[in-house]
Image (cartoon, helix red, strand yellow):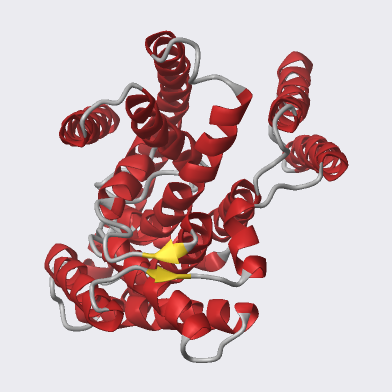
Length: 401
């Protein structure tokens, strides 16, 4: 079939762009691995110094249990924000949205007659609808994401003040409170560690077989053995350390489930691959037949749904919904996503990276609180960390281009 000149140009454009994207993808993957190792090293150094500065309090079993309970909210929020970021957008509203949904969750139990399951389902539906609303403004009305979600940041906080009368709303249902405060029984923790380690071993071996089946060179045996050994040590090590206090906190388990589920959606589904394609090049995604507007809208729906999940965990943990809940939560979530490898330029990152990002941000909060550092200085330090994370992202993008 002969190509007319315009078709020929388009064909050449796709071919050249495909070759360039293949090279860039390899560069980006290498940079992401380097960034991941760097962030893990940063956390280790940070934990070491915080342990010294807090006179041996930071790495105690009790404090680490509190830390992972605190970081769960940030991780869940960051997992939601990840999807708009990958599409080269941003969601500035998730902190206020989380606060509003927490207020609705508490009021639905206290005044509106909802049970635990009903109140949770109710706020998740509302979170999805709020996300869709913002997604429509951004994808279909062409309002810049920063402006649309900044409007949400202000509006959702205002609605929270209105429905709560600017007062805290206590939660009395102990079944609900246990979502944020309970721990998994120790024997179940060991069983879960064994299950996770076994799952990682099976998935690693299956990936090796897939590489061989597809004609690719398998990973060296030593590298496979190191990965398997690391997964086993990490799984059982976390359970062993947290079992020394009261066991695995339920919010920590919810966080892991959320990250696993939405990590699978991002990396293994058609929708997830389309999100990366949109962030990589919206023009190329359109040429490929990807429904760009719809998928961008769905990215904000995911962000809204996880703001709802985070609101449930936070409200249960603090046993109330407060007018100040979620203040600066969007900054922590965005910083966690960027520190974890998501690029503000779009198309890059892994959902699992939000865990190390949230761990670093929560460690800063936790450590400075243990040292009785004034909250104003906490904001200064976290602002510096956020700018530093974006700076690293910019440098990485320049190297990959």
